[in-house]
Amino acid sequence: MGLRRLGILLSMGFLFAAWQPARAADLLAQGRAAQKAGNHEEAVRLLEEYLAQRPKDAAARLAKADSLLALKRWEEALRETDQGLKYYPRNGAFLLAKGKALNGAGKYPEAIAALTQALASDPKNPEVYKERSDAYAQEGKLEEALKDANQAVVLAPKDPWAYFKRGMVQFSLGRHRDAVADMSSAIQLNPEGPLFYFARGQIYLRHLDDREKGLADLKKGCRLGHPLCCQELEKLGLQPEKK
Image 1 (cartoon, rainbow, N blue to C red):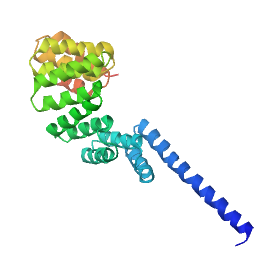
Image 2 (tube, helix red, strand yellow):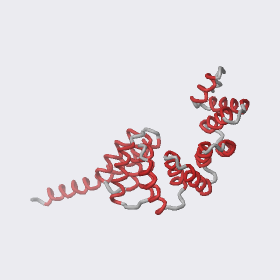
Image 3 (tube, one colour):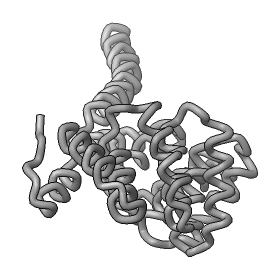
Image 4 (cartoon, helix red, strand yellow):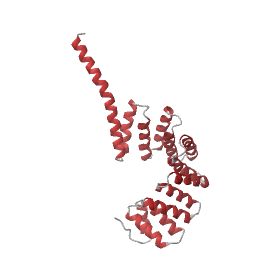
C-alpha cells in the first residue's frame, strides 16, 4: 500500500473516530433540548438513540426515564430505571424515578420499598419523602404518609408542593382546617398555582361551610386556567371568570 493511500485511510479513520462522539453529543444535546421544551416523545427517541451508543450514561438514562414519566408510560419508565440500577445499584436518583414509575402504575407496596431504598442512599431528599407519602396515602397508611409529608416540609420549607401534599394527607385524615393552612402556605409560596386554589376552595365549600372563601378560590383558580375550577363554578350556576 502506498504511503499516500495509507495517509488517506488513516485520516479517514481519525475523522470517523472524531465524528462518532460528536454525533453522540449532538443526540444528547438535542434530546435535552426536546425535553426542556416539553417534547417528551422526541426526547425519548433521541435519548434512546444516544443510549444505544453510551448505555452507561446515568444522566441520559435518568433524563429518558423522566420523559417517560412525563408521558405516563409507567412500565417503560420502570424498565429504564431497572436498566440504570443494573449499572448503578442503590443509586438514589434511579430509585426515586423507579418509585415514581411504580406509583404511577399503582404498585404502591413496591413503590414504598424502592423509595425506602432511595432514602438509605439519600436520606435528606425531600422529593423521595413526597413520593413515598403519596404511596403510603394510596395504601391507606395515612399516619405514615403524614410523617413523610412533615419531613418533606422540614427539608424543603419553600417548596409549595410539600405543603400541598401534606394538606392532602391532612384532608384525608379529616383535619380540614390543618389542610386549609397547608394549602394557604402553598399559595403563599406560589400564588399562581391553580391546583392549590381548587383544593382549598373545595375544602371551604364542602367541609367548612364557607361559601364566600370557597367561591373566591374557585374564581381565582379559573382565572389561572384550571378547568376543574371553571367546571365547579358552572355547576354552582356561576359564570366562570377566565383570563
